[in-house]
Length: 631
Image (tube, rainbow, N blue to C red; front, top):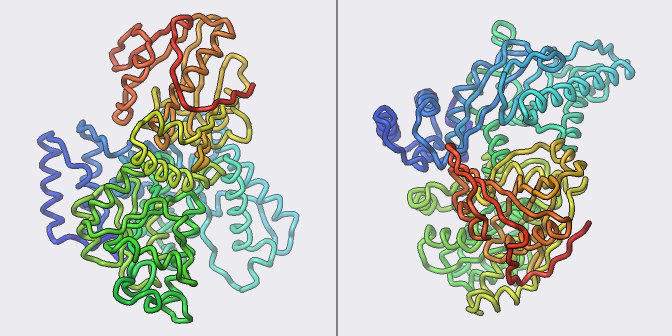
C-alpha cells in the first residue's frame, strides 16, 4: 500500500508518529481521547509503516472501555468463498478515518452455502452488516460459449444464491447483506461482452442483477468492480496469492478496499457527508473576481482550464441533485462574489442552488461554523473544498471534524479527488433524498426570516407550514426504513427495523404506523418523522418516535403528539405508555416525554425510563401547522 492510493487525503504530518504515541499512552492509562484528533490522524496519506501502526492502535481501541461519542460502533460479518482474514485490521483502521469503530467477525472459510441454506449461523449474533465477497468460482453452472440458455440459467442461479443469502442475513444476523460486485475478467477479445458464455459477460450480467436488487432494496452493494477498474485489474489481483492463499485481491490493496467498504458502512450509520462548502476564486472559476472582473475570470471560453471549471460545476450540480446541500465560503465582498452567479453566461451554478452564501472577510473556519449552524447540521456533515493549501490546512487545524479534501490546485483533478474520497457515498436514492438540498435551502431562508421578524410566534406563522400524516405504505417504505436506521439524535429508542420489518408493521392491525411529511412556503421537506405505536386495546405504547433535525423548533413534535392523543381518544384508548432509551447521541430528547406531561413509571438499570400519560389528562398545544391526517 502506498500513499498514492489516497490522493484526496492530506499529506502525512511531520509529527504523526509522536501524536499517535500520545494516543497509545492514553489508551494504556485509560484516559479520555480527543477522538476528532484521532480521526484526523487516521485520515492522512499514510505509508505502509504508518498504516500498520494505525491498524494496531485501532484494534487496541476496539478492545478498550474508553467511550467514544464520535465513533459510531459497527459490527460486520465477513463471508466469502475466498480468504478475507486480511480485512479486519485494515477495516478497523479505515473506520477511524470515517468516524466508525468497525469490529469484524470472519466466517469460516467457504461457509457461503451453509449460511445461505442450512440452519447453522457462522456468526451467532446480530450484526450491523454482512459483507459477502464472492468470485466467479462461487457460481458452479457451466456456460459453454454461445449458449445463451446456459448463460441465462447461470445468471438466474447466481440471483437465487444472492436472494438466499439476503434472506439468511435478515433472519440470522438481523441486517441486510452488502454484496461485492465482481471485478472485470481478463479479456481475450474486445468482443467478450458480445459473446455469451464468456467470463467477462457473465460477470457483467451478475453485476447488473446485483445493481437491480440494490435498487429494489433487497441488499446493498460494495462496488469492488469499480475500485478494481480504477486501480487497474493487474494491480488489483495477485494471481500467485489468489491460487496459493485464496485471496480475492492483493494484500497491498486491503487498506484501499477497506476504506471503500467503510464508506458504505458510513452510509448505513448516517455518517455520509450532507453538505459541500465551496470556495470561489480558482475553485469555481479561474482567477480572482475582485481583481480580474467578470470578463477576466476563466470559465468555459473554449480554454482547457475554463472548461475544467465548467465540468466541475456540472459535477457539483449533480451532487445537489443527489440531495447534497451546497454552500459558499469565500473571502470576498458579497456583492462582487455573487456577480458571476448572476451575470456570467458560462456559469452553471446559480444563486438559487446555494443554500448558504458566506462571502466576507472573516476567517473561513468562523464562516463554516456559521454555515453549519444556519443549516442545522453538525460540522462532521460538512465537506470543504478550496484550491488554497493554506486555507485547507487552517480549516483542518481549527475544525478537524470537517472533511477537507486535498483537491490540489488544478481543476482537472477536482472531480476525481472528490469522487474517490467516498465522502458522498450513499444508499440507493429515493425522492426524499433528492429533495434534501431544497429542504436545507428552505431552512436557511427561514432562518433569515426569523432573524428579521424577531417574534417567534409571528415567525412560525409566517412559514405557512403544512403537515401530512399518513400510514406506512409501499411508496414511502424505503424512506421510512432509511430514517429508522439513520436517525440517532431525535430518536427516543433508536430501534432499528429493516425494510421487511417495516412492511410487516404496515400490515399489522395492532400497530399505528405514521409517516410524517412537512412543507412550508420555502421548501418541501419531505418525510421528517416516523411514529410506531402498539395499539393494545385501551393501552397504547409508543414503540418508535423519531424526527429529522432539519425542522427543529417549529412545533412538529407538538403537532404530531396532539394528533396521536386525539386519535387515541377517538379509538377509546385510556393510556399511552412510552420509553426513552438513552444513547451517546440522543441526549437532546432526554426530557421529551416529561415536557408533554408524561409521568415516570420505572427507571431501569440500563438508564432507560418508562413513562405513562392518561389520555383524558393530555392538554393540546398551540401550534402553527395545518395538519392533514389520512386514514
